[in-house]
Structure formats: structure tokens, C-alpha cells
Length: 453
Image (tube, rainbow, N blue to C red; front, side, top):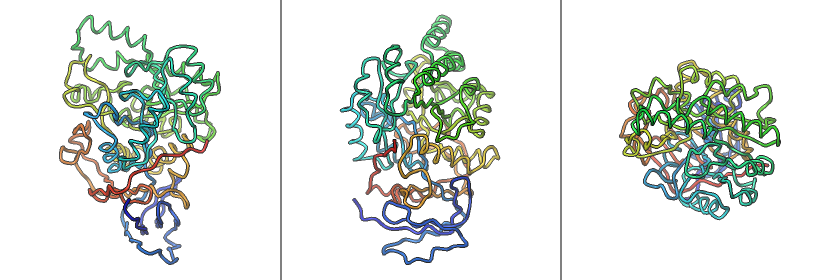
């Protein structure tokens, strides 16, 4: 481990807890020790080895917390791995991630879960947590999960991957009724999807036009499953988090009249469901094939409005890389998912720059809300005593996404060719300046997230 520096970040426009103000932050070791406003400049003596950063003209935000990624390790490392994707994440301002259990082997035992934590401790540049996976026959293992150091239990209520579909009523009752921690669900009804797919295969074989993807993984399939999950959660009093909403219809299942800290049922939207619509399949094809599917322009607009109205609580990525060779296969063989962690924050800042959402709301949904939703200890805010997970962004620094600056192991992005108006210039993880204008300091690794439950 490299010896730490201390940092005084001065003259920044700080975006935090609904405010934007000019000021600075003192970082000592891995913590924030002072936050001050311009009219109350820091006057204390600086610790030795303090580097002063003049952030004039830039905005300082808490590190982004991504509650849904697939970094593909172990078992699928030809697509991605913890090192490469955490590196891309910090370049995009993401300082903490929560990774899903559909690796090889699937994370269905406490032993396999802890093995992933050991992997991350030796190679992740960002802070990390890993979901415990649920299947129809591992309820005993699920109920052993420690709520203080594991982000949640992941339930596929729709066979989006492998054999992890959970549809046994007794298992669902056990998870929803007894889980000691948050239950995160992927909601698509498998029966409806299979019927739709069979109908299209009868007409097109394996070469189904990609434009039919949102009709196969349909609004009905999403709503049927999401509404079932919400009913179960209300029956058992479960702490439920519904992942990646994709339809306007599902929004009626959620409440914006309750403060987030008091909600038992929360939901998220992913960047791709806010950015793309079914109109984009013709140009981008399977590059924007996700589960749940990118749907209509109406759905996209409704999701953004719901985000601003606090019906939707969190913005995430569902970062899920595949190789271009895999994506180029016929519809029935081309996998769903795409890489996003490097470009999620710039995309959300693009919405701000176009007047679609306030800057403080972007920070709320990507930084504060994930910390509150999962009860993460000492992260997600710029507060004295909190970990120094911080991001400096330049809102007047346009750049084009191209092959030369894409950091994902799969080496492509659905945003390729897009111009973003804002750039991440510096990313601090636990007080370490890990990313600095294109350069990485890889001498320190991230930490395991801790939860106050």
C-alpha cells in the first residue's frame, strides 16, 4: 500500500444534499475532516504532506454508488473482470459498486460469496459489495447472509440468466418472509416471455428482428412480475428493491409520498432505459439488447419524470459486458446486456446540461439515494467524518466517446460516437486520488462496504 497524501480541495462548486455552494474539502487519510463554504475559508493548520488542489470552475460531488453491475468474475473473464471494470468505473466517477451473483460458479453459497470478496480486495480500484444469489434450493444459505457486510439478496423472478429463476412458492415465501437484508429483484414473467418468444420463433426462426425484443420481453411480462413482487413484499413486510424499471405502467406500483429512509419498497432505473428507446434498435441492434428490454419513447419519458418526482429512488447501470462477437450473433443467441459504468455519470450530466433534470437531483439519485437505500455506512455524502469518496467534474469539457478512450475489457460502448459535454477529471476513493485526468494510481485498492442495519 502506498503512503497516503492529504488533500485540500479549494474553490470547488460543491453539490451535496440539495445545495450547490462554493467552498472546499479537507481530506486526511481516508476521511473528510472539514467541509467549508467560500465565506468561511479553511483557516486551520494543514497536516504534513497536504496537496492543495485548485478546483476553480469545477464541481465536486460525492462518489457515485452503482447498486447493480455484472463484472463477470469468476468464470466469464473473457468479457470483463473486477480489475478492468472497476478501473472503468472510477474513470466514470463511480467509487462503489454492488455486483451480481450470476458468475460461474453462481454465488449461491456463503463460501463462494466470500471468495468474490477476496478477489475484489486484491484488485478492485473501487469499493465493493456482492449480492448473495438465490435459487429454488439454497434458502438455508441465503438466510445465513450477514446484513452488516453484504448489500442484499438477488432474486431473478424471471430466468434472465442460467438456472437462477426463483419460482418455487415456498422458496419465495422464505426469502420474502425471512431475509435479514434487502431483497433485490429482477422482474420479468418467464411464462409470458416464453410464449412470446415461441410465437416469434415460429415466424422468424433464430433470426428474429431485434426490433421485436421489447415485444418478446414485454410490458406485460414486466408488470406481471413486478406487481407480484410488490404484493409479496407487502404481505411479508419485506425490504424490497425492484431493479431496472423499464415501463411507464410499473410506476403505479411505487409511492413518492414516503421519505426514502422510511420506504420498505424502493425501485431503480438504469441509464440505458433513460437514454435509449425502441427507435434506436434499427441503428444499434443487439448493442442495446438488455433485459428488461429498452422500450418506447413514452416509457423513456415517463421514467425520467418519475425519477424527478421521487417515484423512482435510484439510478444504476446494470453494467453487463459481452464481446462484440457475442453481440453479433442471431437474436436468440446474442446475449443481453452492455457496458455502462464509464459513461453513466456523463450521460446523466448530459440530461442536466439539456435542462432535463437538476444537477442536485442527479447527485441525489446516484450518490445519496443508494447510500440511504442500502444503509451504507459513512458514504454517499460530502460530510465531515465520512469516507473521502469524491469526484471532480468539468461541465465545460466536451469529449467524444471512441475506441481510444473506452476502458471496458470488451472494448466497445453503446455510446460510441456520442459527444458528452461533461468530463470526470478526478476521482478519490477512500482519500486516494485513484483517477487524475486520464492517469490511474493503482497502488491502493477499494474497501468492502459496510451497512448500518
